Length: 155
Image (cartoon, rainbow, N blue to C red; front, side, top):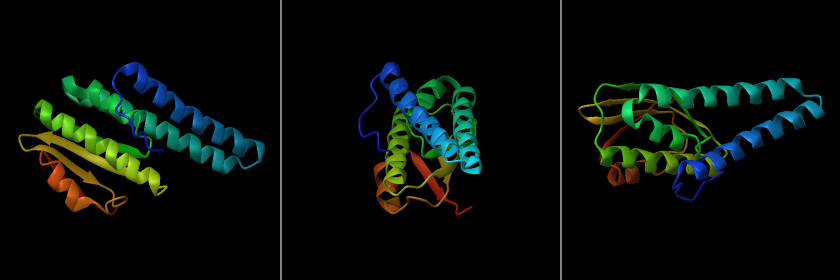
């Protein structure tokens, strides 16, 4: 679901995050009521993996990790597989990454897809390796977000 709004503070971000989690729990309940436990377990696994990825942001992203974690918390269509921070980025690069993450989540949501990514931050800024979903606007994003270096990986 596109979040469409700028999350201005942690309370607003938490409300959106809670809404996404509750939607997943409702889906689990529905699958159980329809006696489709395999689908319910798949949703539990997906939700669990996404929630664990939020912890990865917070733990591995240095001083700016909490900011990225709250942004990712309202991006349920994006899963962080790994994050390595070798050099803390400047504020502009962090802001570009946050905006791009929300944009990619919205694109994935519109198409009913989920994306995965691996992120490294070093002296060159953000190095973002992503699954191939939702990349119709790739050239535009390279122009809009110059602090981000994208690699599309169809894994």
